Amino acid sequence: DPDKDFRPAPGEITSFHVPGGHGIRVDTAAYAKYVIPPYYDSMIAKLIVRAQTRREAIEKMKYALEEFIIEGIPTTVSYHKKIFSHPDFINGQFDTSFIYRMGEAEKQTKEITTKSTEDEQK
Image 1 (cartoon, helix red, strand yellow):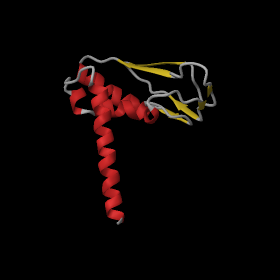
Image 2 (cartoon, helix red, strand yellow; image 1 turned 30 degrees about the vertical axis):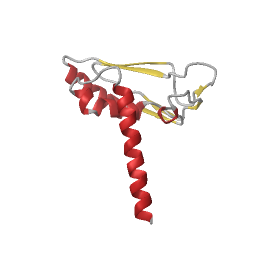
Image 3 (cartoon, helix red, strand yellow; image 1 turned 30 degrees about the horizontal axis):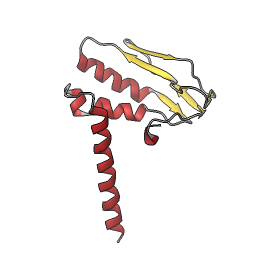
């Protein structure tokens, strides 16, 4: 669960649809109604894409993430959508601190949004 420091999120998958197509692969054993137990690593799927160029691979990944449906439990799908849409990632301007910096920027945005909402309600 990205909102809880990526802690495992056991529970029942209520809906499950994997993307497909040329250059898209999903490794998984999960399915709708599968119950993720709390006793082990809860990675339920790996999404792999392949394309001629990095930019094409990013676009293919964004498409595949849009098509990926997992309901009933928190997932990292929306988090990955943010990564693959981030200008620094797209332009290859990232390093090992990228995820941390992205998270810090998100926290600041949430704080500003919360403060603006509170100010409007006064």
